[in-house]
Amino acid sequence: MHSVLQDFVRWLQDSAVATGVRTSAIYPYVQTLHFVGLSLWLGTNLIVDLRILGIGNRNRTAADISNSLFAWNWIAFCIVVTGGFLLFAATSTLYVVNPAFQFKLGLFVPLALTWHVVVQQRVRIWGRELETSVGAKLGAVLEIVLWLCVVSAAVEIPSY
Image 1 (cartoon, rainbow, N blue to C red):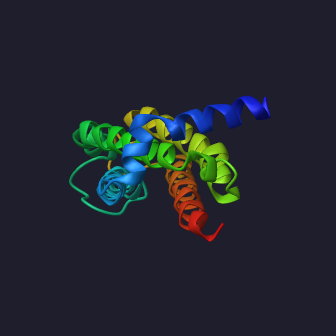
Image 2: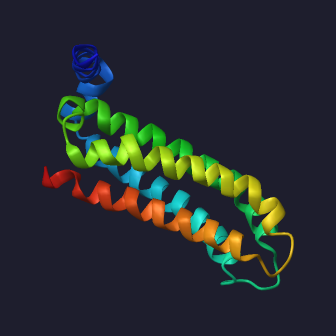
C-alpha cells in the first residue's frame, strides 16, 4: 500500500497541472485563493456556530442564518478543495510525509467535515428557536474546536 501511495503522489506531482502550479508564477495566487476560500468557509461556519451559542443577531434564528449562508458556505468549500488540491499536487511528495499534513488531512479534516455536516443538518432542529439547547451549544463548540485543530495543523506544515 505504501508504494502505491508513493507512486500516486509522484505521478500527481509530475503531472502537467502540478508542474505548472509549482514552476510558474501562479503558485502564490493559488495559495491566496485557497486562503480566501478557507476564510470565507470557516467564517460562514463560525457565524452559524456563534449564533447557536447565543452570540450574534438575536433577531434571527441559527436555522435562518444557516439557510442564508448555505450557498456561500459550499461555494467557499469548493474553492478550498480546488486550491488545496492544486497546492498539494504541486509538491505532493513533500506533503505526504509531513506529520502536520498527515494529522490535518488524515484526522482533523475528516472529523471536522463530518461534524460540520452533522451541525448543518441538526441546526434545522437546534436553531428553530432564538434560544438553543445545551446539546446544540456543545455541538457548536465541538465544531469550532475541530476547525481550530485543522488550522493549527495547517500552520505547522511549514515547520516540517
